Length: 227
Image (tube, rainbow, N blue to C red):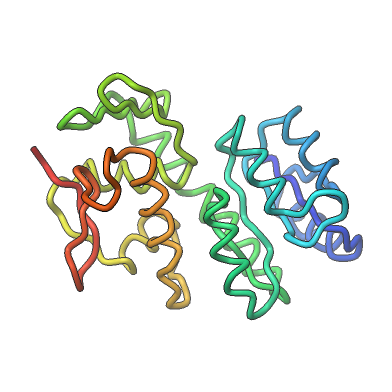
């Protein structure tokens, strides 16, 4: 059974999400402030965390950043309508995705299921090691090494890199990456991919402005450069 943590200080919203997800067979736990959410995430590895930004005690950005210090569990941020900067900041702090308030519960369930499908497919299909040019990915343990130095990636950063490394020199558009890595058609917002690529480069590249691994084909998309 998939385990979900829902974090929001609006108890009616939490109650509605919890009821709907439980109807789909998910095990749902709830938190109503940032400190409580962080404590629960420290005690349990959730399959996904649904995390509001505006929270008492610690805001969602602080919680997301703190969780990333010890776990790569998937995090979906809840952002205000029109809060473009909040969306980007959430991704910068390590969130895997975001949903804009007010939202339709069907969209929330679709995003969560997409993460589950991608995670299960990767677990089922991936084994052994891949890489090249000093980069090594252990697909069984989902660990990444650069010249034997381990690099800590979030779930979506790992999935993104795995797809590119498995298909060297193949250029993927941002829209293709959204569909293949996030598991659904995104409503035209490709900044999610750009932010994840930037974060990925900061972690694996000696010089992110002159990347050795994840390269850009201007006007087209991204690719992993084979040796």
